[in-house]
Image 1: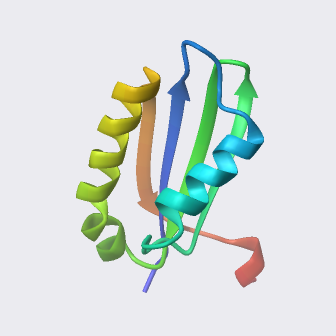
Image 2: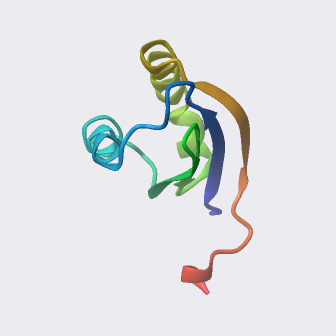
Length: 98
């Protein structure tokens, strides 16, 4: 089975949340119940961040889609953030697996 990646890019009109806020958000809202193998978020500049979610399978990514959409709607409403890009597909190579 092939791992599956979901990449996103976001705009924060009032600035990207702090590292402490981001870690708390991930610990409280994502980690407890996510099907993902890993989630990585990084800051591009003061108003943009990107992320990649690695799922064990495409089926796991699809199963969690409704939860991701609900979380996005909540975050868009509460922080005014906007999804700019999203790409999904099978992982073709992963250094840690080589």
